[in-house]
Amino acid sequence: MNLSLAGKTAVVCGASQGLGLASARELALLGASCILLARNEKALEAAAASLDASQGQQHNYYVTDFTRPEQVKATIAAITDEQIVNILVNNTGGPSSGPILAAEGGAFAKAFEMHVVCNQLLAQAVVPGMKASGYGRIIQIISTSVKVPIKNLGVSNTIRAAVANWAKTMAGELAPFGITVNNVLPGSMSTDRLGSLFRATAEARGVPVATVEEEWRQEIPMQRFGDPAEFGAAVAFLASPAAGYITGINLPVDGGKTPSL
Image 1 (cartoon, one colour):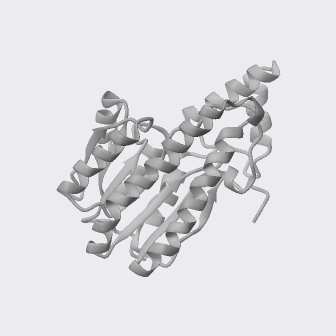
Image 2: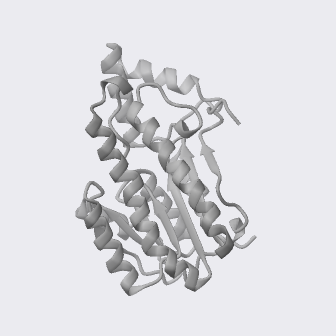
């Protein structure tokens, strides 16, 4: 099985922590040079320094803010002016939790810009190079909510579904060029994001955080939360040559929790 990403360049969004960083680490272990994007320069610097470089990779980072699409557009233009990007991992922090009817209209517009519009700008910038190089992988880190909506995540459920359909449409358009487009759907992974959801849910219900945590754990057939490295491994596989005939899919990494096929 050919998993080597030696000589390939990956742009990984939201890569200063959590699932973005976990994905970058696994891509680097397969030989990719990674360019990390996020807002916090200090965290980005530390993240880039933590990546494996044993195969001669050159890792780098750019500070950019996904609440400002024009800044994201300028950042990716600066990157593609210098090199071809073979792998794009789209990943942006999820919208705030809460019932859908409690959300202001602006929350949907902001989330759409951050997730759909920024993904579009990034894809438009990297696809010409992917076509020219004969190698392209575009991977979205979304949520299992694209299969089954999650309670108390009204805005997120809505926007994640939009991203999934955007990606599926693009997968069909890019398949003739050998460029694959896939979505990886994290379930309950041990990240800061999961902890914030526990706290918000516990506060809304007036119960201890530990109670919410245990309830969520019991809903997972594997009876544990996922390790971010396990999620990153799925992203890295889809980025590899071995996954060249897989496109347009939603891949849950959730310990079996999602009840649908």
